Length: 369
Ligand code: MG
Image (cartoon, rainbow, N blue to C red):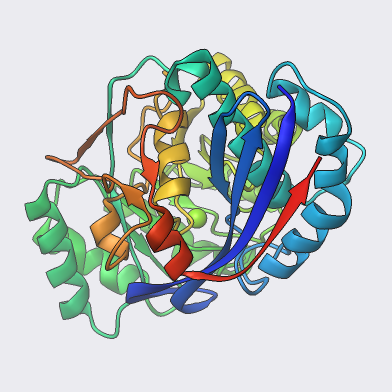
């Protein structure tokens, strides 16, 4: 595949509802949309999940733009590649910057799948035809508002509920949810809000029969998590502290978790996501795909990777209409009875809408061979 040009767009879209986690509230979403055009006329799309600030991980929209513009795109334009798996190798001497790498690699995967005439899911080796999805509910002002949202999502057919927690919004709300819904698949995402000093609070969560507790401790920790997992029945899921298949190998060896949240952007791309998926499958570790408030383009990539066989837990990939007034793809991502059907069309299987993309573009730059 020879790349003819790459277009970066700085996008800004308003969220339908503000989204609050232990690290802050988001009202809108800035991100970089990547379009790759190959010499044989294929167009691949992906987006970077880096946010405007560094509260989730250290990467931001601005650092991603810099890394793509000054380091990663020049590497890509240097010589043709024969398979997208080569991209992570090509980028390997650039340290870190996983989200920037993943966005470029993802667009190349989309173009590659289109060139092969297969869906991105098939190109990745995915076998599932439909995937179960859940929703992620941010921290609310009151328990009543939270319960009303949960009720609404269950009515819509979502298969599991994930709630964001933080000290003071944890045991109380989980108890309240379990009082009303004793049996629903329920998980809690702490986004690093606790330390081992909170061990009594964390162990008390065992009584709620949670599918998992996600990243209770430090954003770069796997050691304390191992200590916590040894004392908790609830499976710990790692999110923020996993960047590579190597990190997963170490986490498995230490016993830091029983579940891994695979976010394509956080681990540097689809090729690395597949490696993590395979290592987890071989070690009896379940995986699922977490969301980063993506537009439809990123959402389509999440759907494709979730078609791999060891994605046995519902992911965060809810319908477009859950997050956006209008999405930038046609058709929008639709959830029916808590399931998304994996598109069969070549590539990501959804068509980016150029008018709507233009409407939300703040600035852009085109790089030619
Ligand atoms: Mg998380």
